Image 1 (cartoon, one colour):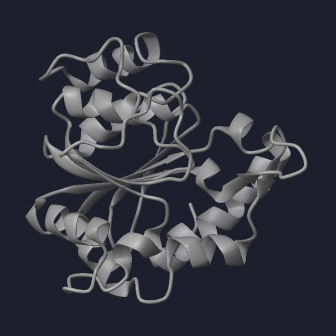
Image 2 (image 1 turned 90 degrees about the vertical axis):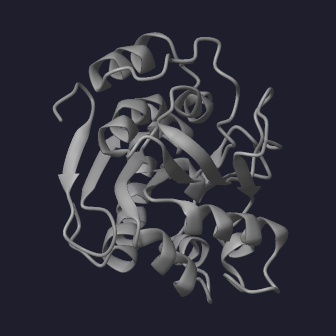
Length: 235
């Protein structure tokens, strides 16, 4: 797939074989359509719950080209309505969202959404009676899914500064690793990656401290995601 602002990756490791890197998160829409079994289960790691209902939801059965145009022209430039747009368009059936902040207008209580602030909250005691309610719902969604798409927003690995909320503090390599792959999450990731058809990675440098800070953060995140989680080479 050749589209402006989207870099496609061929992956040779555990999990997805196709990956896409871009900046505005709304560009995930055509990428998800490209690899989705229509519909697929989405697992997204983000700092924000990007679940604001779209003012212009895409029609079902649009082509990938039409979805690409829709994402660029119709979805919100604040990049917080693409998840529900994908559900409206029949690309995604359900979504597991790991995020910590809730933008104004975002919804987190729906039958097709599982929401949690950390991977640990859904991965702990995976598949057992001792799992959290979110973990049990996520396990059911993963078990029933025929295809899964993994999505990561780089700003998942940032925190607003306590001294100045407008200043973004990028996470260290160790903190990213602890968040993505907490102790005891092996069974969770085995289940997800065993059905993972594609991977999307939104960089959004303006949300990650600027070009230089986001570049360094991207390197750390790639080490964890590609080398340690997918067990493949760096892109």
